[in-house]
Image (cartoon, rainbow, N blue to C red; front, side):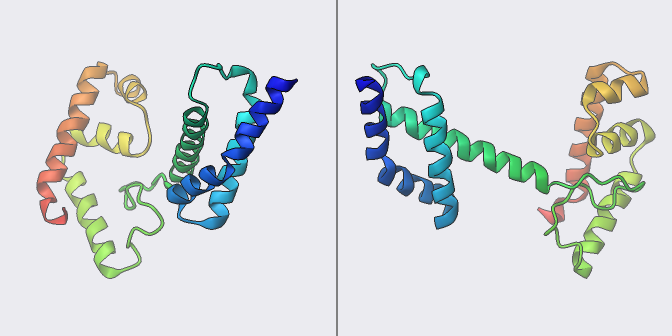
Amino acid sequence: MAESTTFKQRLLGLQGNLFNFAYQLTTNREAAQDLVQDTTLKVLDNETKYVDNVNFKGWVFTIMRNIFINNYRRQVRSATIIDSTEDLYHLNLSQESGLTTPEGSFAAREISEAINEFAPEYKQPFTMYVAGYKYSEIADKMGLPLGTVKSRIFFARKRLQTLLKDYR
């Protein structure tokens, strides 16, 4: 019981440092407080996994960093839109893609036109890949070896970059 008490005391002693680190990561006071709370709960849940000869502060900060990274990745995944239109008009762009501006709409149309100029053996796997299919799914649907699908997508991507080099 005394060992558990010192564990909790050490954790409570780090709360100020944890908040400062969380604020650096999030740049938002409320988000930083949430991150500190999530980290504290995770540390307390995993108290039995802590080994005494490990740097306690480093262990706790690593847990916080991992929680922040996982939350960030979850946010990015939920913000991505999969374009299911026939001509891939949106190309998986985020909500703030600029498509509402005339320039953004024109750029998306140019990208679609460039993709439509590809030979069918490059266009089909590339559009399937952009639509969210995995390499193995594309290979199965097209009846091609996995390596062929990967190389065709690679070359289609390179060609698209060359055709649209003005947008970089």
